[in-house]
Length: 408
Ligand SMILES: Cc1ncc(COP(=O)(O)O)c(C=O)c1O
Picture 1 (tube, rainbow, N blue to C red):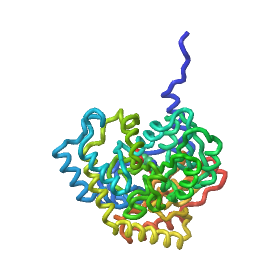
Picture 2: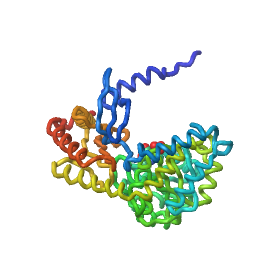
Picture 3: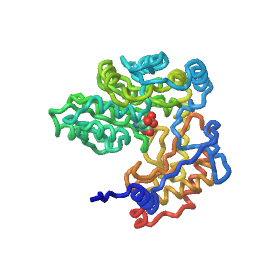
């Protein structure tokens, strides 16, 4: 008898239609050119320029001449690809130089370059945890950390957002297994900062390893931009591993795990997302090295960013806009239902601003938002113009009725 399997194409079509009905369809928008925070995007048959307020280029380094110059110079001598995985023939002096620079910056013994932050999170949990172990995570951790625990096959226990006693309770339920307590440093969709000092105490008393994914804190927070861990005055003893992503404040692509030398050495030999993949292009590592040096030493970028965050919040709250509590460059505006988030995003778009609506499953049901992000490369006038456009959009977009909101 022939099997009667579900048709995956039909299923995909159906799921897409379901997403449509719930206002959850997602679209890519094609950027043709970037000039600072302005982007020329495809629009119908033509194009138009938008002022970008939803990227992660917090320090404005992605187009810095020293960073792109380093990439071009390195590509001219070493080519565009690494040519192999790290343990075969793809490990280059430029990777090693970047690892040394980041270890020095963060004052930790060792560092390891990986292809992306997503891969790095998979690497950490897969290499360190097995079936009998447990990973305890904040409920709002990044998707890659959740997926990493699934890949590792370990038990995954989640605690309420930013709730250190909740983390302690979860760890206590499994006292005899090896454990990682994993948290974002700065939460990617909320912009708030994890209670790292409290979590460090929990990890210490429970003999769990505290792992901090600082994708959105590095470069932006802490002394010399060393991130959320340094800002919380925690050393490598308290946080044996942390994640630095190269694609956000550092303006490039890739990631670096930084911390304890034994852990890093083990990851370098056994982490599947490190071992079984092509090494990052050395030219990209050279670009990131230039970016790290700028991020470390150009304090004015962080000061400028902090001033813009302050300006944005003061003016937005003055306009009665419903901002979430955050002092980072991630400044989410609560919308609730998907329809309101989409309508506000469309109104901003019409006024020349790019702020993508963030909807489930990226955020919990009923918590759609505009994730507004600021960069040191924005001008004061850009922020002021955004606030005016937001206030006008809020006044023009009718509030949804709650029944529709639940449905959406
Ligand atoms: C908290 C967090 N961790 C990890 C990642 C993944 O990093 P990457 O974009 O380098 O894969 C992201 C980025 O989206 C993130 O926000």
